[in-house]
Amino acid sequence: TAGEVDLAIYNLVGQRVALLASGHHSAGRNEVIWNGLDLEGRPLAAGVYFYRLRYASRAAVRKLVLLP
Image 1: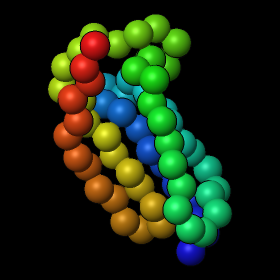
Image 2: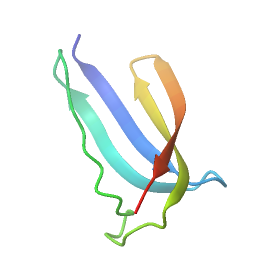
Image 3: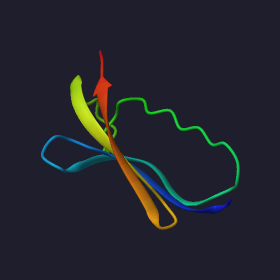
Image 4: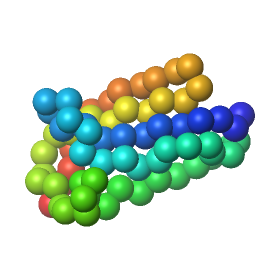
């Protein structure tokens, strides 16, 4: 179903370093590609990050690895 979505990337200390999607999204499959840049457009270092996806009343946090 359609709804409000928030998809953000966090570093290991919990600081939000990138915002990939925010706002209302349509129903169905959606795709987001992260280019490895931070909120100010600078490249982030390779390493471990977390992403948090919030949709409606649900949220999921998963680990990801950014490779050079």
